[in-house]
Amino acid sequence: MARVSLTPRRTVFFRLMEWCSKRAYGKVLAPGRALAHNPRVLRSDPAFAGRAPQAHY
Image (cartoon, rainbow, N blue to C red):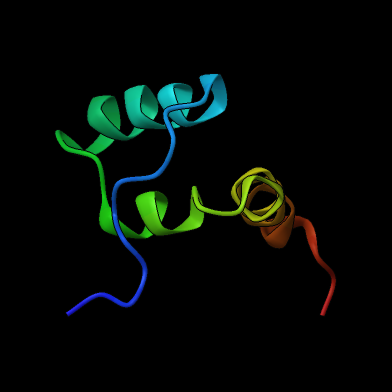
């Protein structure tokens, strides 16, 4: 059972994330809904994922 409710507020950014998720995967994924409870985390997660391949290890 999820500790975080998967029904966050439907902000503009969350709706954009929903649209992208539905387009890419055919449904809205649960991790995206969980991240939407904290807008700063929701915005920073795609930024981190986009920069990770550019990192020099």
